Length: 251
Image (tube, rainbow, N blue to C red; front, side, top):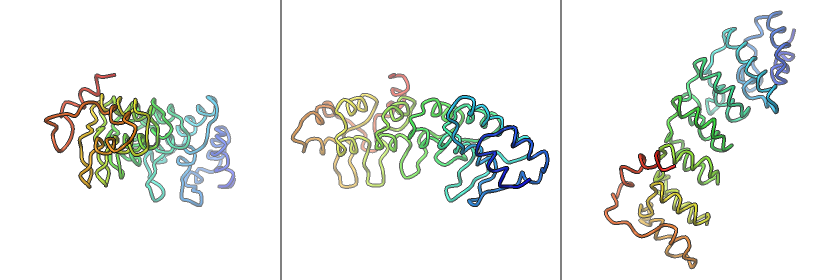
């Protein structure tokens, strides 16, 4: 019974073959591919195109964990965990839910898994990860909210904003989501929505320019109008401290 046959069975999500091969040779549980992925990494990375495949994926993960594979083992330069792969590659929220129930910690996954869930606009995965401990404003260069906003993943960005993400987070150049929205000429109603959810047009970037300054230089006034009237008494370090609470209730 070869390691190659077992790895192939895991990738095909052939639950019966995986169990049969491991029963015949328990030592194969330590198998890894050329990248260093163990069997659980591989199982959670496989693509399951239909509900049946997603169920088999959970069964294989259960079998591998029951035989002793660690649930949060990191792999690769980004220290990816099986939970991360379940969201980023398999896109199997029931698998992610199963792994968390078995003890996987979202905090151990790169970006808490939120960047991956946001990229796919998987709102169920976002809800699961945040509810079970992923830090909503975890910074990996930027926050998940700002990444989703700049990627144009607006449904995910809006979900994060509604659930308390910092809509005024500034990147390494001091730019907020509103700065990026002006620069990328996002639809003005999107900017207006973000302002209603606590984004401040007055925050300066490292050059001392606010999103309002940028919008004011545009010939088309729709972007400036979307930012609303200029605020007074804005705290220089950020938005109104009650903004996050408003975000949670302003659905």
